[in-house]
Length: 188
Image 1 (tube, one colour):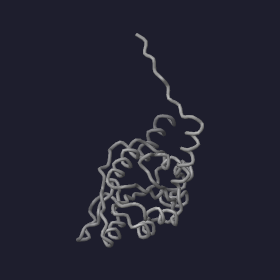
Image 2 (cartoon, rainbow, N blue to C red):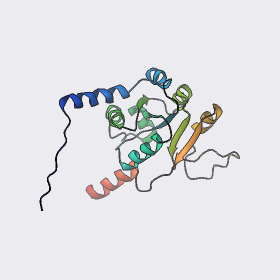
Image 3 (cartoon, rainbow, N blue to C red):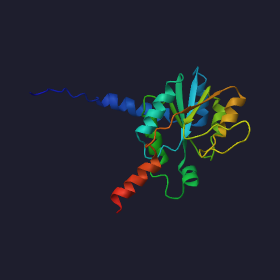
């Protein structure tokens, strides 16, 4: 039995429109602040997003469902190297930003060079700040016995009345695990 599949391809005009929209979604902090004024419930997250994988995609799609629009703070190449070591990032900040901006669930991408995201959160004041479940919220009694890194930005968000939501971590989906798998399979 033969199946006839009709291929659907974008016209040159549609491709140009998608490309322009992707570049518009990559914005400076000033542009993000201006755009933020039009958003009722801003959801914000941040990260490196090196070697983008399905765990990242699922996380961003779930974050977007929590509000009107999702902004993503993207660590610059320099801050990524400082945080992850001299071999990272594997993908440049401009390529990572384009990839994130191309996602339907992402309304804006802001590249930041600081080691923490405090400045972006303070300026944007999202109603909802989201991180993965591989982080822990600070405890009231300063008990830091968790093996997870503490999400220090949470206190800033709570101070202005925002919410912090941790989306459950999907085991088996991390850039570090992906790199380890590649090395194991191809460098023996």
